[in-house]
Image (cartoon, rainbow, N blue to C red; front, top):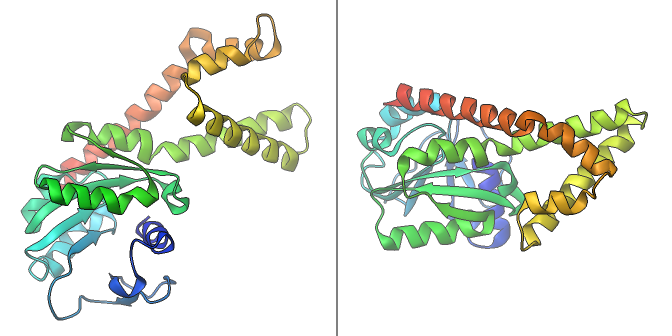
Length: 253
């Protein structure tokens, strides 16, 4: 995810490759000009440090680099389930900002949720401007809701991909060639999403507009709407993701 964000920032021209220094366990293919090594360089601290490793590596990274990056102006974390308070215990920074991006940030069509109790207005504006090329940027005022946002927007692309695959599979079950069904399902979801984003009414209204009384769309919607089956399934899905985020938060405290 950190790599996807970096590539989009550089492509959008908001970050210069030679202004970025990446610390990782082994060299990876990165945009031109980006420097990478196994440890932080000597010299003054950068304006911002972003944590983009696995949440389970938090303590190791804090032990290795916590003293070195103490007093960095902004510490940005994209670690799922790691609360600001848990970061503050391990790192000293002028401001700590949590960010939850999702995968479409790679093409500038993602969602980035932000949360911070320590960032002042100038820092919040700077972070929001940095995130703007990635897609929709939303500040979450109540930190307790960040796990909910992670379940909806952070995990959401995985659920949408599963739906696309299931839609294509259902088409194949009706007799369509699998590759053709996959193309049709993907294009249908893409076009429907773009239309919904541009519409002046909500998706529920759009669904009813598509479904004429007694028609084939209505017959299918009746299956999805039966006993609120689809809505109940998605509530259960997001609740499971939210619980897992809470478990990771507890482990990081």
